[in-house]
Amino acid sequence: MSNVTEIPIESFTVAEKLLLMERLWEDLSRRPTNVSPPEWHGDVLAARMAAVKEGQTEFSDWDAVKERLRSRLK
Image (cartoon, rainbow, N blue to C red; front, side):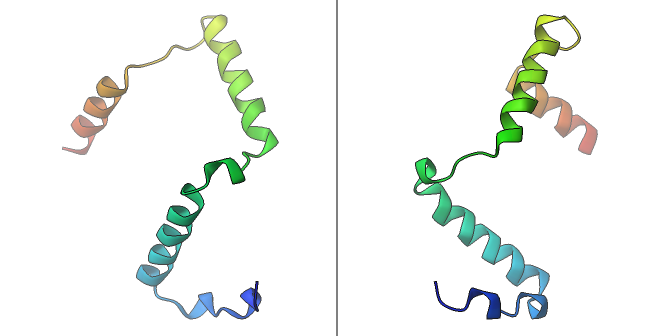
């Protein structure tokens, strides 16, 4: 990697920064096995699964969630 620390991202516009993030994500997504999730993700998932088992929360159907979100945005 050559001089990544010298990329003047602070001078980029918001649009340029978003485009850069999209391109980085697209590149990383091509090889998902090379990107390991952080350890805390496992902790969060375990806590959420425990909450479901204990009846403190429940899963929602993805289509139903999208519809609720769309309704809120109207």
